[in-house]
Image (cartoon, rainbow, N blue to C red; front, top):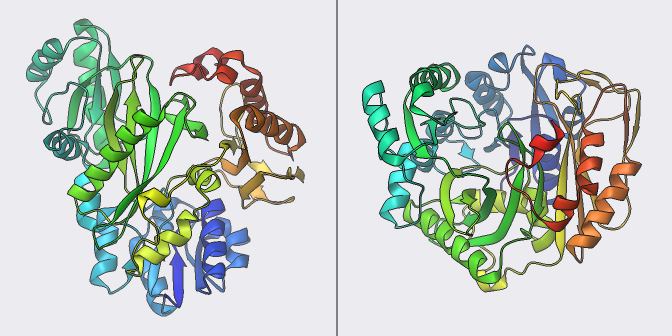
Length: 444
């Protein structure tokens, strides 16, 4: 096993990884920006190094500083968490070339699945369903218009290297296509340094279903059930649950087998997530693959009893998967609410000092967080404060448990989206499982 791992991240995921390492008997190195000098992850780690100023580009995205920190502390491996450099193939390759183990897939797999055009082509080759699309990147507006008409409006223009809704434009008619096309290309170039875009048929009111996969370097691949991530705002998830309230065993197995087929075909190793859209007729379509651990991984841990972070570390060390598909069993139901420092109505970020804090507890309640009373939420990073997770024997019981936990939770000094989550827990359609990715529009 590794003796020392550097965590190239901050906040709750850094704390989560440090705790997993402690349970495995591994020493840890935290890196931090000047804004995070007193953050919890710096106190829990065995060592902590400042890697730059508050801005992400000068610290958590500063590859040379992170590699230097690993070298001076003799860290054998780097865990990137999620966000920042977690899906940066160049960073993974630099780690490989420096003799530092990157806890994640190979840089080759990251490049292949990180480019949405290449990923779709690979998936089509495997005969996994995808929505009608342009079959390649498009640079010329006239060609793009011809393809959009052939596919049929409405269509979505998407960035090839994109994610999180950036470089994405929904177009309902040909009249607005030209402006949307150029806007999407410009946004993609600004956000990802790559202006390539493609066109895809718009799937109206789908659910967002993702399959957690896990693979070792010996060709063994399993899936750990699914997560329903349909509760989103501007393509950003705010609530996830597992299993999905609408999947039956046949559909679950079909999606799981498709995800395993994709991972095995590209020689994928470690942990990843294959994401699908599920339409009203219960047909699923490949959307993308996230080559990292997901924010919402706890709901899968709760229903399977498998510690995904520990397994990531074991797989990176070269161990075989410790279980086969037949050993994966889902028990009960789990829900995760992302607690963000933001106005619950306008969603404007709300940095500041936390003046009062109470975290809920009790059977089946888990909180993943790095905040404390007196902690100052910096304005420089993602607004996630905590992940509130519950597990129960049934979905109905999990809903009641989450509602109780949200009522108990107190965060004062900054605005949070806790009131929004409370509204969701009382919504009749959500309780009945009748949701899609447009669900939150009723609360806007």
